[in-house]
Image (cartoon, rainbow, N blue to C red; front, top):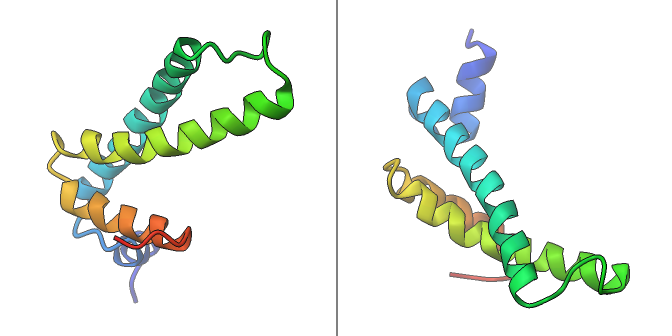
Length: 101
């Protein structure tokens, strides 16, 4: 009988616990970095919650955050040696949005 962690690793196509830890670190760094980069980009194009309608600001921010996150996820995975894993992950996620690579 396999334990829960073995099932999680198999489901995520991860080979060992150390790879799992690295992948979690990449996700954490990318999420934080994507928020910072998106905020800076929104400031650069002069869209903020103070000078824009919330009906414009939030959808634009979410779209930019999604795009920036996808790019940063691949870039962040390179120094951690996990590009292959995250490239497969990206193809799967983008495929769900109808974008085939």
